[in-house]
Length: 129
Length: 391
Image: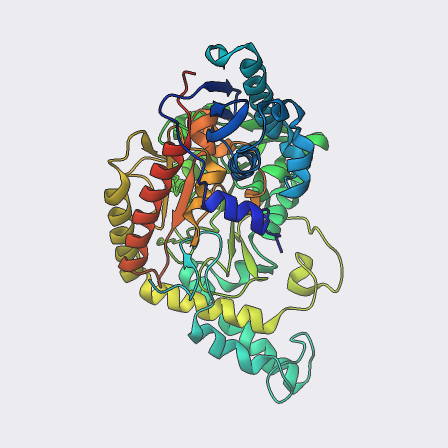
C-alpha cells in the first residue's frame, strides 16, 4: 500500500494557508524563483518586530505548508530571528521528505534574504531571480 | 455524488470495482462444497473446475474474436506484456534482434524493452505526432530485415489516445514481423475482432473491465512463427507456455466480466462519451488549459488535461476527495514528468500539471459536476497563492 505522503500537519497547513497573500505596502519584500519553486515573502515591521508576514508560493504541498508554518512562527518575533531560520527544523516538524530539502532551502533563502534586507533598511527589500 | 462516503472515484483507468454479477460467479469457487479443485486433476472435482476454465475461455474468446486455444492465462497485463515481448523476442532471436516500440507505452512494455536492450537486442523507439497517434508510414520506415517484433498499445493508459492497430498491424504482416498490442485499456471497451485484425499477440487484464485483480490473458495467434518462450517453468500447464495451477475463481470472474462487457459495450461507450464531454465543457474555458491527446482519436473513458502555472502535486492534493491520477497509476509516486506527455511535445512544466480523469460504468453526472467545480476551485486557489513569474 502506498503510504500517505503528507502528515496531518502538512495537510492542515496546506488546507488553511491563512498567511497566503500580500500586504498592501509591505516594509520588506523578497522573491526567489527557482526552476520548480517560487517563494515570495512580505513583512510589515514595527520597531524591529515582524508584525505581519505573508507568503506567496508555487510548488509542492510541502513547500506551501512550510511557508505557512514559517509565517505563523515568525509573526511577532524580532527581525533578527530570521537569520537563524533554518530548513532543518521545518523538515523535521512537518515533516518534509528528504528529497524535498532543495525546495525548503529556497524558503530558507527567502527568509534570510528578508532578514538581510531589514538590516539594510526598509527600502532595501529586493527580489531575486 | 456516489463513489463512497468520503471519496469521488474518477480513476477507472487504474482499476475498476468488481461487478456484483462477477462476484456472484466467483464466490462458489473458493470454499469446500464448491468447485475449488485443481483443474489439472483428473478426478470429478478437477473436471468440474476445468469446466469453469473452459467456459471463461469461451467468454473471453468471444469478446476478442479469437479461438479459446489462442488464450494463455496470466496474472495480469504486466505478465502478459513480459511473456509476449520477451517470450517472442527470445523465440525469434536467431532470425534477428531488432525490435520496435514507442516511448509512450506503459512501463510494463517499455521496461521489458529496456531489459532486452541490456541483453543485446536493439530497440527503435518511435515518437507519435502531436495528437499522440503513430503514422503507419513511420513504422514502415523503421522496420528492417532483422526486425522481429513491434509492440504498440491500443489505448494509451494516460491520454486515452487510440492507435490504428489495424493499419499498424498490416505493416507488420506485410514485412513478416510479429505485432504485439497491449490492450489493457481497450478490451471490453472497444470492439476487437482478432479473427480479422492483423495482431499476433495481445495483452489484457480483468481488473480494468470490472473483473478481479490478479488475472489476465495473453492472446497468441495460431499462425506459423508466432510463438512465445515461457518465462517460468513448472508443471506444463497451458502447453508449457505459462505453467502453474490455474486460478479457477479469478479466471471464471474474468470470463464473466468479459461476457458482461460484450453485452453492454455499446451503452457504456455512449455513457463514457457523455461524461467526458461534460467534464471537458466544464473546464475548457480555464486560462492555459490543454487537452493531452487529440479529441477525435481518444477513448472517451479518459480525459487528460494540463494547465499552465499550476503545480501538479499541489493540484492533486487540492482536488481531494477526488481520486484522479497525475500519470499512470503505477508511476504516480514518481514526480518526473510523464514520458508519454513529453512525447506529445508538452514542456516539463505542462506535463507535471497533468491530471487524468477516467470514468467508468458507475460514474454519475453528479460526480463529474463535482469534479468540474473541484478542479476549478483548486486551480483558482493555487494560482491565487502563487507569486508572479516576474519578481
